[in-house]
Image 1 (cartoon, rainbow over the protein chains, first blue to last red):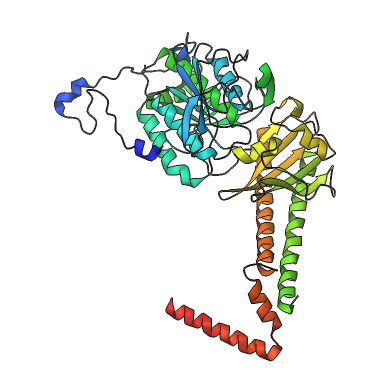
Image 2: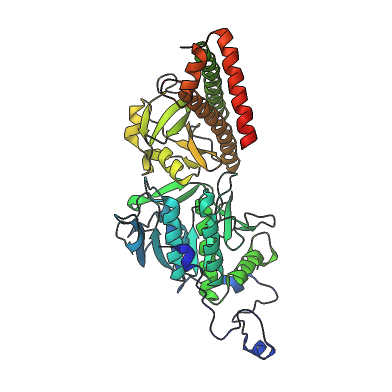
Amino acid sequence: MSAAIELHEHEEEEDLPAWSLPAEAVDRIRVPVTLPDQVTREWAWGGSTGAGVRVCILDSGIELDHPLVGRVDHSVAVLRDEEGELHVVEDDEGDLCGHGTACAGVVRSLAPDCELTSVRVLGAGYKGGGETMLRGLAWAIEQEFPVVNMSLSTTRTKYVERLHELADRAYFKRVLLVASAHNMPVESFPWRFASVISVGSHEETDGLTFYYNPTPPVEFFGRGLDLDVAWLGGGTLRCTGNSFATPHIAGICALILGKHPDLTPFQLKSVLYQTASNAKGAAA
Amino acid sequence: MSDLEAAVAAGVLGADEAHRALLQATVEVARAIYGAKAASVFLLDEEADELVFEAVAGEGEGELIGMRFPADTGIAGWVLTTRQPLIVDDLSADTRWSRTAAESTGYVPKSMMAVPLLVEERALGVLNVLDRPEESRVRLSEVDLLGLFANQAAIALDLLQRARRAREALAGEGRLAPLARVAGRLEEDERDAALELLRALDRLLAETT
Protein backbone atom coordinates (compact mmCIF):
# COMPACT_ATOMS: atom_id res chain seq x y z
CA MET A 1 0.00 0.00 0.00
CA SER A 2 1.18 3.48 -0.64
CA ALA A 3 -0.10 6.01 1.82
CA ALA A 4 1.54 8.80 -0.15
CA ILE A 5 -0.54 8.02 -3.25
CA GLU A 6 -3.76 7.70 -1.33
CA LEU A 7 -3.14 11.03 0.26
CA HIS A 8 -3.33 12.90 -2.99
CA GLU A 9 -6.94 11.97 -3.63
CA HIS A 10 -9.00 14.98 -2.70
CA GLU A 11 -12.43 14.47 -1.35
CA GLU A 12 -14.38 17.68 -1.38
CA GLU A 13 -17.23 18.41 0.97
CA GLU A 14 -20.58 18.28 -0.78
CA ASP A 15 -22.05 21.60 -1.81
CA LEU A 16 -19.42 23.68 -0.09
CA PRO A 17 -16.87 25.74 -1.98
CA ALA A 18 -13.42 24.24 -1.66
CA TRP A 19 -10.99 26.79 -3.01
CA SER A 20 -12.71 30.18 -3.19
CA LEU A 21 -15.97 31.71 -2.08
CA PRO A 22 -18.17 33.20 -4.82
CA ALA A 23 -20.66 35.79 -3.52
CA GLU A 24 -23.66 33.58 -4.24
CA ALA A 25 -22.14 30.77 -2.17
CA VAL A 26 -21.92 32.76 1.06
CA ASP A 27 -25.42 31.75 2.11
CA ARG A 28 -24.65 28.09 1.52
CA ILE A 29 -22.00 28.02 4.22
CA ARG A 30 -23.58 26.75 7.37
CA VAL A 31 -21.61 26.38 10.55
CA PRO A 32 -23.40 23.53 12.34
CA VAL A 33 -22.25 24.54 15.81
CA THR A 34 -21.62 28.07 17.00
CA LEU A 35 -19.87 28.48 20.31
CA PRO A 36 -21.60 30.53 23.02
CA ASP A 37 -20.06 33.76 24.33
CA GLN A 38 -18.74 31.87 27.32
CA VAL A 39 -17.92 28.24 26.71
CA THR A 40 -18.27 26.35 29.97
CA ARG A 41 -17.68 22.73 30.90
CA GLU A 42 -21.43 22.43 31.40
CA TRP A 43 -22.05 23.64 27.84
CA ALA A 44 -19.18 21.54 26.50
CA TRP A 45 -19.98 18.14 27.97
CA GLY A 46 -22.57 18.47 30.72
CA GLY A 47 -24.78 15.35 30.61
CA SER A 48 -22.61 13.64 27.98
CA THR A 49 -21.42 10.08 28.39
CA GLY A 50 -19.65 9.95 25.04
CA ALA A 51 -22.57 7.93 23.62
CA GLY A 52 -22.44 7.62 19.84
CA VAL A 53 -18.80 8.71 19.60
CA ARG A 54 -16.44 6.24 17.93
CA VAL A 55 -13.00 6.33 19.54
CA CYS A 56 -10.09 4.54 17.91
CA ILE A 57 -7.18 3.28 20.01
CA LEU A 58 -4.10 2.95 17.79
CA ASP A 59 -1.86 0.87 20.01
CA SER A 60 -1.00 -2.69 21.10
CA GLY A 61 -4.60 -3.98 20.93
CA ILE A 62 -7.27 -4.01 23.64
CA GLU A 63 -7.95 -6.95 25.94
CA LEU A 64 -11.49 -8.19 25.44
CA ASP A 65 -13.80 -8.43 28.46
CA HIS A 66 -11.60 -6.31 30.70
CA PRO A 67 -13.86 -4.93 33.46
CA LEU A 68 -12.34 -1.44 33.22
CA VAL A 69 -12.69 -1.35 29.44
CA GLY A 70 -16.02 -3.04 28.82
CA ARG A 71 -17.26 -3.48 25.29
CA VAL A 72 -14.80 -3.28 22.41
CA ASP A 73 -16.85 -2.78 19.26
CA HIS A 74 -14.24 -3.73 16.70
CA SER A 75 -10.64 -4.97 16.70
CA VAL A 76 -8.27 -5.00 13.75
CA ALA A 77 -4.53 -5.52 13.43
CA VAL A 78 -1.99 -4.32 10.88
CA LEU A 79 -0.06 -7.41 9.85
CA ARG A 80 2.60 -8.13 7.26
CA ASP A 81 1.97 -10.99 4.80
CA GLU A 82 4.63 -13.33 3.40
CA GLU A 83 5.46 -10.85 0.62
CA GLY A 84 6.02 -8.13 3.21
CA GLU A 85 2.83 -6.23 2.36
CA LEU A 86 0.89 -4.69 5.22
CA HIS A 87 -2.80 -5.47 5.61
CA VAL A 88 -5.51 -4.42 8.03
CA VAL A 89 -7.19 -7.63 9.16
CA GLU A 90 -9.81 -8.60 11.73
CA ASP A 91 -8.10 -9.38 15.02
CA ASP A 92 -8.94 -11.58 17.97
CA GLU A 93 -5.54 -11.54 19.70
CA GLY A 94 -6.63 -8.90 22.21
CA ASP A 95 -3.63 -7.04 23.60
CA LEU A 96 -0.09 -8.38 23.50
CA CYS A 97 1.39 -6.16 26.19
CA GLY A 98 -1.22 -4.13 28.07
CA HIS A 99 -0.47 -0.61 26.82
CA GLY A 100 -3.49 -0.36 24.51
CA THR A 101 -5.80 -1.81 27.16
CA ALA A 102 -4.56 0.86 29.57
CA CYS A 103 -5.37 3.64 27.09
CA ALA A 104 -8.79 2.16 26.35
CA GLY A 105 -9.54 1.92 30.07
CA VAL A 106 -8.72 5.60 30.61
CA VAL A 107 -10.99 6.67 27.73
CA ARG A 108 -13.75 4.42 29.11
CA SER A 109 -13.39 5.91 32.61
CA LEU A 110 -14.23 9.35 31.24
CA ALA A 111 -16.62 8.51 28.40
CA PRO A 112 -18.47 5.41 29.66
CA ASP A 113 -20.76 5.05 26.63
CA CYS A 114 -18.35 5.75 23.77
CA GLU A 115 -17.67 3.06 21.17
CA LEU A 116 -14.15 1.63 21.16
CA THR A 117 -12.22 0.29 18.19
CA SER A 118 -8.77 -1.22 18.54
CA VAL A 119 -6.16 -0.94 15.80
CA ARG A 120 -3.22 -3.10 16.81
CA VAL A 121 0.05 -1.71 15.46
CA LEU A 122 2.36 -2.45 18.37
CA GLY A 123 3.20 -5.52 20.36
CA ALA A 124 5.93 -7.26 22.29
CA GLY A 125 8.99 -7.58 20.07
CA TYR A 126 7.27 -5.82 17.21
CA LYS A 127 9.56 -4.81 14.35
CA GLY A 128 9.03 -2.35 11.50
CA GLY A 129 6.77 -0.30 13.73
CA GLY A 130 6.89 2.91 11.67
CA GLU A 131 5.30 1.49 8.52
CA THR A 132 2.78 -0.43 10.60
CA MET A 133 1.80 2.68 12.53
CA LEU A 134 1.36 4.66 9.29
CA ARG A 135 -0.83 1.96 7.76
CA GLY A 136 -2.97 1.75 10.91
CA LEU A 137 -3.33 5.52 11.06
CA ALA A 138 -4.27 5.71 7.36
CA TRP A 139 -6.95 3.08 7.98
CA ALA A 140 -8.31 4.95 11.02
CA ILE A 141 -8.59 8.13 8.94
CA GLU A 142 -10.33 6.25 6.11
CA GLN A 143 -12.83 5.00 8.69
CA GLU A 144 -13.37 8.60 9.84
CA PHE A 145 -13.19 7.98 13.57
CA PRO A 146 -13.98 11.31 15.23
CA VAL A 147 -11.28 10.64 17.86
CA VAL A 148 -8.06 8.66 17.43
CA ASN A 149 -5.85 8.09 20.49
CA MET A 150 -2.16 7.80 19.59
CA SER A 151 -0.09 7.12 22.68
CA LEU A 152 2.88 6.42 20.43
CA SER A 153 5.26 8.26 18.17
CA THR A 154 8.22 7.71 15.90
CA THR A 155 11.64 9.36 16.07
CA ARG A 156 12.48 8.36 12.48
CA THR A 157 12.49 11.35 10.17
CA LYS A 158 11.91 9.21 7.07
CA TYR A 159 8.27 8.88 8.14
CA VAL A 160 7.75 12.56 8.90
CA GLU A 161 6.46 13.68 5.52
CA ARG A 162 3.90 10.91 5.19
CA LEU A 163 2.85 11.30 8.82
CA HIS A 164 2.43 15.01 8.31
CA GLU A 165 0.21 14.45 5.29
CA LEU A 166 -1.84 11.94 7.23
CA ALA A 167 -2.23 14.34 10.16
CA ASP A 168 -3.45 17.13 7.88
CA ARG A 169 -5.75 14.75 6.05
CA ALA A 170 -7.22 13.71 9.40
CA TYR A 171 -7.72 17.34 10.41
CA PHE A 172 -9.67 18.11 7.23
CA LYS A 173 -11.75 14.93 7.55
CA ARG A 174 -12.80 15.78 11.09
CA VAL A 175 -10.69 13.02 12.55
CA LEU A 176 -9.14 14.37 15.73
CA LEU A 177 -5.70 12.91 16.41
CA VAL A 178 -4.84 13.06 20.10
CA ALA A 179 -1.13 12.29 20.29
CA SER A 180 1.32 11.72 23.16
CA ALA A 181 4.27 14.03 23.47
CA HIS A 182 7.55 12.18 23.86
CA ASN A 183 8.55 11.64 27.50
CA MET A 184 12.08 12.80 26.73
CA PRO A 185 13.32 15.99 25.11
CA VAL A 186 13.69 14.45 21.65
CA GLU A 187 12.11 15.12 18.26
CA SER A 188 9.38 12.63 17.51
CA PHE A 189 6.13 12.63 15.59
CA PRO A 190 3.17 13.09 15.03
CA TRP A 191 2.62 14.97 18.29
CA ARG A 192 4.78 17.90 17.09
CA PHE A 193 2.38 18.74 14.27
CA ALA A 194 -0.03 21.63 14.72
CA SER A 195 -2.90 19.63 13.18
CA VAL A 196 -3.03 17.19 16.11
CA ILE A 197 -3.76 17.65 19.81
CA SER A 198 -0.51 16.99 21.65
CA VAL A 199 -0.57 15.88 25.26
CA GLY A 200 1.93 15.88 28.11
CA SER A 201 1.46 15.03 31.80
CA HIS A 202 0.61 16.99 34.93
CA GLU A 203 0.98 15.66 38.48
CA GLU A 204 -2.57 16.06 39.78
CA THR A 205 -5.00 13.26 40.48
CA ASP A 206 -8.26 14.40 38.89
CA GLY A 207 -8.91 12.95 35.44
CA LEU A 208 -10.88 16.01 34.34
CA THR A 209 -8.10 18.42 35.29
CA PHE A 210 -6.26 19.47 32.18
CA TYR A 211 -4.21 22.50 31.19
CA TYR A 212 -3.78 24.47 28.01
CA ASN A 213 -0.15 25.32 27.27
CA PRO A 214 0.25 28.58 25.33
CA THR A 215 3.88 27.71 24.53
CA PRO A 216 3.71 24.54 22.41
CA PRO A 217 4.72 22.06 20.95
CA VAL A 218 2.84 20.35 23.82
CA GLU A 219 -0.57 22.04 23.78
CA PHE A 220 -2.38 20.27 26.62
CA PHE A 221 -1.42 18.53 29.86
CA GLY A 222 -3.58 15.69 31.18
CA ARG A 223 -3.34 13.36 34.15
CA GLY A 224 -0.29 11.18 33.68
CA LEU A 225 1.30 10.41 37.05
CA ASP A 226 0.79 7.31 39.19
CA LEU A 227 -2.33 5.98 37.56
CA ASP A 228 -3.84 2.57 38.20
CA VAL A 229 -4.65 1.68 34.63
CA ALA A 230 -6.30 -1.40 33.12
CA TRP A 231 -3.75 -4.09 32.26
CA LEU A 232 -3.70 -7.67 31.02
CA GLY A 233 -5.60 -10.44 32.74
CA GLY A 234 -8.39 -8.13 33.86
CA GLY A 235 -6.09 -6.42 36.32
CA THR A 236 -4.52 -3.01 36.81
CA LEU A 237 -1.00 -1.63 36.82
CA ARG A 238 0.40 1.55 38.37
CA CYS A 239 1.76 3.62 35.49
CA THR A 240 3.20 7.04 34.75
CA GLY A 241 3.70 8.77 31.42
CA ASN A 242 2.25 10.82 28.61
CA SER A 243 0.84 7.60 27.14
CA PHE A 244 -1.82 7.75 29.85
CA ALA A 245 -2.31 11.52 29.89
CA THR A 246 -3.27 11.32 26.21
CA PRO A 247 -6.38 9.12 26.59
CA HIS A 248 -7.59 11.51 29.29
CA ILE A 249 -7.75 14.26 26.68
CA ALA A 250 -9.15 11.79 24.10
CA GLY A 251 -11.87 10.83 26.60
CA ILE A 252 -12.76 14.46 27.25
CA CYS A 253 -12.93 15.02 23.47
CA ALA A 254 -15.32 12.05 23.22
CA LEU A 255 -17.50 13.63 25.91
CA ILE A 256 -17.58 16.94 24.03
CA LEU A 257 -18.34 15.27 20.69
CA GLY A 258 -21.08 13.22 22.38
CA LYS A 259 -22.88 16.48 23.02
CA HIS A 260 -21.67 18.45 19.97
CA PRO A 261 -20.95 15.89 17.24
CA ASP A 262 -20.56 18.49 14.49
CA LEU A 263 -17.60 20.34 15.99
CA THR A 264 -14.61 20.49 13.67
CA PRO A 265 -11.14 19.72 15.08
CA PHE A 266 -10.45 23.48 15.02
CA GLN A 267 -13.58 24.21 17.06
CA LEU A 268 -12.96 21.28 19.39
CA LYS A 269 -9.46 22.49 20.16
CA SER A 270 -10.95 25.91 20.97
CA VAL A 271 -13.48 24.28 23.31
CA LEU A 272 -10.67 22.35 24.98
CA TYR A 273 -8.75 25.58 25.50
CA GLN A 274 -11.78 27.40 26.89
CA THR A 275 -12.63 24.59 29.33
CA ALA A 276 -9.05 23.91 30.41
CA SER A 277 -8.37 24.16 34.15
CA ASN A 278 -6.29 27.30 33.60
CA ALA A 279 -9.01 29.01 31.50
CA LYS A 280 -12.17 30.70 32.74
CA GLY A 281 -14.61 28.13 31.28
CA ALA A 282 -13.35 25.48 33.71
CA ALA A 283 -15.04 26.98 36.74
CA ALA A 284 -18.56 26.83 35.30
CA MET B 1 51.79 -6.23 15.18
CA SER B 2 53.49 -3.34 13.38
CA ASP B 3 54.55 -0.16 15.15
CA LEU B 4 51.75 1.78 13.48
CA GLU B 5 49.13 -0.83 14.29
CA ALA B 6 50.36 -0.91 17.86
CA ALA B 7 50.27 2.88 18.11
CA VAL B 8 46.78 3.18 16.66
CA ALA B 9 45.50 0.25 18.70
CA ALA B 10 46.89 1.86 21.86
CA GLY B 11 45.13 5.12 21.02
CA VAL B 12 41.85 3.44 20.24
CA LEU B 13 42.19 1.12 23.19
CA GLY B 14 42.75 4.12 25.43
CA ALA B 15 39.65 5.76 24.03
CA ASP B 16 37.72 2.54 24.57
CA GLU B 17 38.71 2.48 28.23
CA ALA B 18 37.97 6.18 28.73
CA HIS B 19 34.53 5.82 27.20
CA ARG B 20 33.79 2.76 29.24
CA ALA B 21 34.81 4.68 32.37
CA LEU B 22 32.46 7.52 31.37
CA LEU B 23 29.63 5.03 30.93
CA GLN B 24 30.45 3.44 34.29
CA ALA B 25 30.50 6.87 35.96
CA THR B 26 27.10 7.66 34.49
CA VAL B 27 25.46 4.53 35.91
CA GLU B 28 27.16 5.09 39.26
CA VAL B 29 25.84 8.65 39.49
CA ALA B 30 22.37 7.55 38.33
CA ARG B 31 22.34 4.88 41.03
CA ALA B 32 23.48 7.33 43.70
CA ILE B 33 21.05 10.12 42.76
CA TYR B 34 18.05 7.81 42.83
CA GLY B 35 19.29 5.85 45.87
CA ALA B 36 18.75 2.72 43.79
CA LYS B 37 20.01 -0.83 44.32
CA ALA B 38 21.51 -0.93 40.84
CA ALA B 39 21.84 0.94 37.59
CA SER B 40 23.00 -0.48 34.29
CA VAL B 41 23.37 0.18 30.59
CA PHE B 42 22.48 -2.22 27.81
CA LEU B 43 24.07 -1.77 24.40
CA LEU B 44 22.01 -2.90 21.41
CA ASP B 45 24.09 -5.23 19.23
CA GLU B 46 22.16 -4.68 16.01
CA GLU B 47 23.84 -7.47 14.10
CA ALA B 48 22.97 -10.10 16.69
CA ASP B 49 19.70 -8.33 17.63
CA GLU B 50 20.73 -8.65 21.27
CA LEU B 51 21.07 -6.42 24.32
CA VAL B 52 24.48 -6.60 26.00
CA PHE B 53 25.36 -5.40 29.52
CA GLU B 54 27.99 -2.65 29.05
CA ALA B 55 28.04 -1.04 32.50
CA VAL B 56 26.66 -2.02 35.89
CA ALA B 57 26.69 -0.21 39.24
CA GLY B 58 25.46 -1.85 42.43
CA GLU B 59 23.91 -5.34 42.34
CA GLY B 60 25.70 -7.45 39.73
CA GLU B 61 28.59 -5.00 39.33
CA GLY B 62 31.63 -6.68 37.82
CA GLU B 63 29.75 -9.89 36.97
CA LEU B 64 27.24 -9.05 34.29
CA ILE B 65 29.31 -7.19 31.68
CA GLY B 66 28.98 -8.95 28.35
CA MET B 67 25.86 -10.92 29.31
CA ARG B 68 23.33 -10.96 26.46
CA PHE B 69 19.56 -11.17 25.94
CA PRO B 70 17.40 -11.11 22.81
CA ALA B 71 16.70 -7.45 21.95
CA ASP B 72 12.96 -7.76 22.59
CA THR B 73 13.41 -9.07 26.14
CA GLY B 74 11.39 -7.56 28.96
CA ILE B 75 11.10 -3.93 29.93
CA ALA B 76 14.32 -2.95 28.16
CA GLY B 77 13.03 -4.53 24.95
CA TRP B 78 9.81 -2.54 25.22
CA VAL B 79 11.70 0.69 25.89
CA LEU B 80 13.93 0.04 22.90
CA THR B 81 10.95 -0.67 20.61
CA THR B 82 8.85 2.31 21.69
CA ARG B 83 11.86 4.61 22.33
CA GLN B 84 10.03 5.89 25.39
CA PRO B 85 11.11 5.79 29.03
CA LEU B 86 9.15 3.53 31.34
CA ILE B 87 8.69 3.47 35.10
CA VAL B 88 7.32 0.32 36.66
CA ASP B 89 6.73 0.24 40.42
CA ASP B 90 5.62 -3.41 40.56
CA LEU B 91 7.43 -5.50 37.99
CA SER B 92 5.67 -8.71 39.03
CA ALA B 93 2.37 -7.20 37.82
CA ASP B 94 3.78 -6.04 34.50
CA THR B 95 3.39 -8.52 31.68
CA ARG B 96 6.23 -6.88 29.72
CA TRP B 97 8.76 -7.85 32.37
CA SER B 98 10.81 -11.04 31.97
CA ARG B 99 11.35 -12.72 35.34
CA THR B 100 13.45 -15.42 33.68
CA ALA B 101 15.88 -12.86 32.28
CA ALA B 102 16.08 -11.11 35.66
CA GLU B 103 16.72 -14.40 37.48
CA SER B 104 19.57 -15.23 35.12
CA THR B 105 21.36 -12.08 36.33
CA GLY B 106 21.20 -13.27 39.93
CA TYR B 107 19.20 -10.24 41.09
CA VAL B 108 15.43 -9.97 40.75
CA PRO B 109 14.27 -6.38 41.18
CA LYS B 110 10.84 -5.21 42.34
CA SER B 111 10.75 -1.91 40.48
CA MET B 112 12.52 -0.37 37.54
CA MET B 113 13.00 2.78 35.54
CA ALA B 114 14.25 2.34 31.99
CA VAL B 115 15.05 4.91 29.35
CA PRO B 116 16.21 4.54 25.74
CA LEU B 117 19.65 5.84 24.76
CA LEU B 118 19.01 7.89 21.63
CA VAL B 119 21.58 9.53 19.38
CA GLU B 120 19.91 11.34 16.51
CA GLU B 121 17.61 8.71 15.02
CA ARG B 122 19.38 5.70 16.43
CA ALA B 123 18.50 3.84 19.61
CA LEU B 124 21.84 2.60 20.93
CA GLY B 125 20.67 0.90 24.09
CA VAL B 126 18.82 1.27 27.37
CA LEU B 127 19.68 2.75 30.78
CA ASN B 128 18.05 0.91 33.70
CA VAL B 129 17.63 2.00 37.32
CA LEU B 130 16.53 -0.84 39.60
CA ASP B 131 14.77 -0.63 42.97
CA ARG B 132 14.61 2.95 44.14
CA PRO B 133 13.62 3.20 47.83
CA GLU B 134 10.02 2.00 48.08
CA GLU B 135 8.73 5.11 49.83
CA SER B 136 9.91 7.46 47.08
CA ARG B 137 6.98 8.38 44.87
CA VAL B 138 7.84 9.06 41.27
CA ARG B 139 7.63 12.68 40.22
CA LEU B 140 7.66 13.98 36.68
CA SER B 141 10.90 15.85 37.41
CA GLU B 142 12.54 12.45 38.05
CA VAL B 143 11.49 11.31 34.62
CA ASP B 144 13.10 14.44 33.19
CA LEU B 145 16.27 13.74 35.18
CA LEU B 146 16.34 10.21 33.82
CA GLY B 147 16.23 11.69 30.33
CA LEU B 148 19.31 13.80 31.13
CA PHE B 149 21.25 10.76 32.33
CA ALA B 150 20.16 8.94 29.21
CA ASN B 151 21.64 11.69 27.03
CA GLN B 152 24.97 11.42 28.79
CA ALA B 153 25.01 7.62 28.62
CA ALA B 154 24.02 7.73 24.95
CA ILE B 155 26.98 9.97 24.12
CA ALA B 156 29.39 7.68 26.01
CA LEU B 157 27.94 4.62 24.28
CA ASP B 158 28.21 6.28 20.89
CA LEU B 159 31.89 7.11 21.47
CA LEU B 160 32.57 3.57 22.69
CA GLN B 161 31.01 2.10 19.56
CA ARG B 162 32.95 4.45 17.28
CA ALA B 163 36.23 3.51 18.97
CA ARG B 164 35.44 -0.18 18.55
CA ARG B 165 34.61 0.26 14.89
CA ALA B 166 37.91 2.13 14.37
CA ARG B 167 39.83 -0.67 16.05
CA GLU B 168 38.07 -3.31 13.98
CA ALA B 169 38.83 -1.38 10.77
CA LEU B 170 42.55 -1.30 11.59
CA ALA B 171 42.95 -4.86 12.87
CA GLY B 172 43.12 -8.25 11.14
CA GLU B 173 40.69 -8.35 8.23
CA GLY B 174 39.49 -4.76 8.76
CA ARG B 175 39.05 -2.31 5.90
CA LEU B 176 42.10 -0.19 6.77
CA ALA B 177 44.25 -3.04 8.05
CA PRO B 178 46.33 -3.41 4.83
CA LEU B 179 47.29 0.27 5.02
CA ALA B 180 48.40 -0.11 8.62
CA ARG B 181 50.37 -3.26 7.76
CA VAL B 182 52.13 -1.72 4.75
CA ALA B 183 53.12 1.37 6.69
CA GLY B 184 54.29 -0.75 9.60
CA ARG B 185 56.52 -2.97 7.47
CA LEU B 186 58.57 -0.12 6.01
CA GLU B 187 61.96 0.85 7.37
CA GLU B 188 62.26 4.40 8.66
CA ASP B 189 63.92 5.92 5.55
CA GLU B 190 61.51 4.01 3.28
CA ARG B 191 58.61 5.27 5.33
CA ASP B 192 59.42 8.90 4.52
CA ALA B 193 59.47 8.06 0.82
CA ALA B 194 56.20 6.13 1.15
CA LEU B 195 54.55 9.00 2.98
CA GLU B 196 55.74 11.41 0.28
CA LEU B 197 54.14 9.09 -2.29
CA LEU B 198 50.87 9.16 -0.35
CA ARG B 199 50.97 12.96 -0.11
CA ALA B 200 51.52 13.18 -3.87
CA LEU B 201 48.56 10.84 -4.41
CA ASP B 202 46.47 12.98 -2.08
CA ARG B 203 47.38 16.17 -4.01
CA LEU B 204 46.62 14.46 -7.32
CA LEU B 205 43.21 13.34 -6.09
CA ALA B 206 42.49 16.82 -4.73
CA GLU B 207 43.28 18.33 -8.15
CA THR B 208 41.26 15.85 -10.16
CA THR B 209 38.14 15.77 -7.98
